[in-house]
Each structure stands twice: as structure tokens, then as C-alpha cells.
Image (cartoon, rainbow, N blue to C red; front, side, top):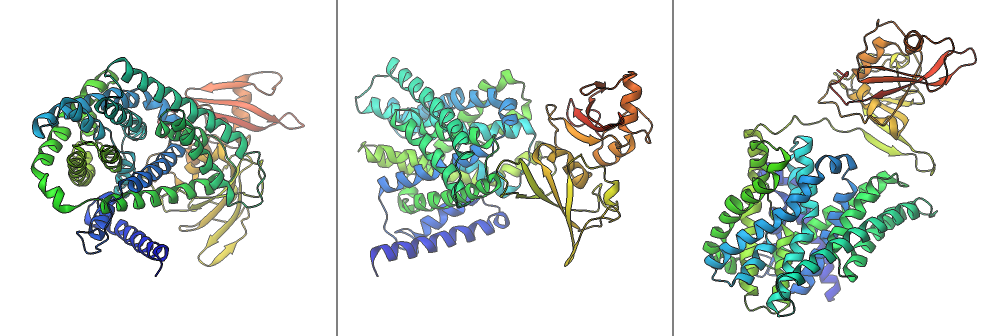
Length: 578
């Protein structure tokens, strides 16, 4: 068998084993990343597979490429609302928090491992950041749902603190190799990496949005690849200019993910698969790189260092950097415990080996052991810790399936499939009585094995699959009709004005959207606006506020009747929304 054939065979087997291990991760109570590492270790030269692999250059390349894909996918799925909510504490943790963690861990390493101060801080920098792949994997597999600000802080920190770890690692290696002095040189390197990385990410992301929506490709399957190309371009451009490629690819993902793109659902699905492939490949390869016998040799020192990192360095960094941001003690305790380590430290630990540092093998083995301890202990106990602290929120219902109207490039519309549940506001209601936003159309109802063309008299039943054609801007309001009563309702952004028919009644607003107005239930929005405005002539744009609800005139009929009313919820759910 040719070497390439053998490589493909082994790669396919390892991928299958990695996917199979993810299937059992929840049942075993282990994070998927631990099982991926275990697959690699068992397949290695000291495991059952007997695969001899000690190519640190190849492992570093695979780890870097995989992490770029994971960060890009994380950026694509990070909404601007989360960034606005948590960018300050996240930035503090991603910079000052990583620095404090690294220095404290480095000082401990000098005592525990007998390293020099520079070597100790190098090791501390390698393990100082919270790993994005580890955090995303644990949150996905455990189904853990946290308070919005807490979750946003954790995810944004983990996605944005890798550049700081890379800077500390590269900077300390330059110092140890005599190529740079500690002080102004290191500060200049930090500013250069962050500035170039941020600029490259934002610029490439904006160019990508412009190009993706204007290039007419014959094959729809090329659009996800085109989006990936801009992510890789952001990384490569920043890295070639001595900037942070990881920061660039993450920011490019954020810019692209928060704009409407052609075939956006397909793009997200593709990159979700790419991120999973990256995680499996990265952790399995890094597992292959390990030798259990060498890990056992450093187990006492590794355990001591892991205890300092988890119980002292990370908590102190969290409390010092986040106290100004008014997190309560339970949230600070949880963030202290969620300093998960993963593939980034192992990938960075290959740097000293590649550059021939005398203490490189010791640093690599200790880092690998620390990552295993962190992933197993913190990863397994994360949901339990959240519950004990009272921070875990009820699990949200499965989101409705979205199908893009792929043939219409310039229409911001989707076909959304809702499943009518027993607690849905739509259950038992006729289609004509649903008070859907104006322009929203029910295209099809699937009941069992039957397709039912919807009519006004069609009554929706439990377990019906309802296919709704809508614009993305009204999605959150339509979600309330079909998912209301199941789990907490999502915040409706105040900047969006939802179109409703003027014939919609106050009672229907409360019944289908949970929105309460101080008016008789039978009163229509048309009548309510006329009475409230008390104007001889109603004109487009006239607006009246009812507490946290604002109504405006959007469309008038030939006889002066208000046919379309704009509804704005000015302060989210719970304020005027039941």
C-alpha cells in the first residue's frame, strides 16, 4: 500500500473514532476534547495503534490551521449584541487577565520545575489563556446555558485571548534566544501584533462582505468556501505583516457573521462542520504527539503547577481584572473555574521544541499534563459548578429550522420550519386568527405524512410542522407566536419596527406576542392610534408611545384607514411583554 493510501486510511479511521467518541462524551460525562486526545494517545506509538509520530512541525501546522477555522467559526456566530454587552470585561480578561495568570504561573514554575525566570514566564504564557476550542466544545456538548452577560464574557474572552498567549510565547522565546530585550522591545511587539491583527481582520471582513454579496457564482456550494477564503486571507495577511493572525481571523469572522450574506445558512453550517473537523484533527494529532511514559515522569510537578494555575493564578487574575465590572461573587467564582486549557497551549508548547530550546521537552510534557488535568477536572465539573452556584438557566427549546430562499439573492428572506408544541401560542388556533406580522405567509403545513395547503380556516395542531415565509427582521416576533410559553423569550431589539396589520387587536397582541397595552382587548391598533393621536388627519410616521411599546403609522389605505402599524418594543422582554 502506498504511503498516501495508508495515510488516508489511518486518517479516516481516526476521524471515525473521533466522531464516535463525541457521540459518547455526554454519556460518559467527559468533554469531547478529552476523548479526542485519548483517541490520539491510544493510536500513538505507546498505545494500541502503534503509530510513531513525533513531527512537531506538522503538528504545529495542523494545530494552527485548525484553530484558525475554530476561531473563524466562533467569530461568525458571535453577535454584536454580545460584544456590546461584554467587550470591556472580556478585553480585560483577554489582556491583563492573561498577563497576570502567566506571570503567577511562571513564578510557580521557577520553583516547581527549577526553570529560569524567563523560562518560567514562557511556560506561564503558554498555559495562560482560556482555550476557545475547549470552551466551545464543553458548552456545546454539555448544553450549559448561562446568563447572557456571563456567557458572552466567557465566549468572547476565550476567542480573543489567544493573541496575548501567542505574544507572550513568541516574545519570551525571542528574549531567551537573545534576539530581543525585555521592556520596550516587548511592548512594541505587543502593539504591532494587536494593531495589525485588528486592522487586517476588520478590513478583510468588510471587503469580504462587499465581495461575497456581489460575486455571482454558478455553484452555490462555492459561497461557503469563498467565505473561508476571506478568513484565511485575514490570518495570512496579519501574520505576514507581523500581526496576530488569530485576532485577525476572529475579527473577520465577527464582521462577516454580523452582516447578511448570500446563502448565509449554508455558510454557517459549512463552518460548523469545518470547526468540528478542525477540533477532531487537532486534538487527535496532538494526542499522537504525546508519550504517556513521559507524562508520568512529570506528573508530580505537572499536578503541582496545575493546582497553582487553577486554584491561585486564574482566580486572582479574574478577581483583579473583573471587580470594576460589577460581577457578583458567584459569577467571579465561576469565571475563575472556567479557565479551560486545550489545544492552544499544546500547540504553543511545540515552539520551544522547534527552536531547539534546551528545556523544550520538559515544557512540552508539563504543558500537556496540565492541559489534561484542566480539561478533565474543569470540563467535567463545569455544569455541576454552574448549578451549585445557581447560574445555570433552563435549557431553551430547539430552534426552528431555517431554509434560505437561495434563488433570490437580493431578498432578505427565509423559510422557517416551526414545530407546533402543546404550549405554543399557535396550538389550536386557526391560521386567520394568528395575527401574524404583515408580509408573513404560512406556505405549508405538514401533519404526519400529509401536506395541508393552509387556508384561513386551517386549525394548527400539536406536532404540526408549519413552514413560514418571512423576512429576517420579523423572525423574533414570529418566534413568539410558535414558541411562546416554552422557555424564556428572547430580547427583541428596540431598533427593529415590526409591521402589523391595523386590524390586529390589543387582545391578539397579548395572546400571541405577550405584549400588554392598557386598552380594551377588542380595540384594533387602527382605532387605538386614531384615538390616541386625536388628530384630524392621520399621516404616515405619526407615532405614539404606550410605556415600553411604541406604535406608528406605516401604511394608509385609500379611505384613510391605517392598514399597517409599526410596533417597536423599546426595552426588551419583561417590560410590557408578558
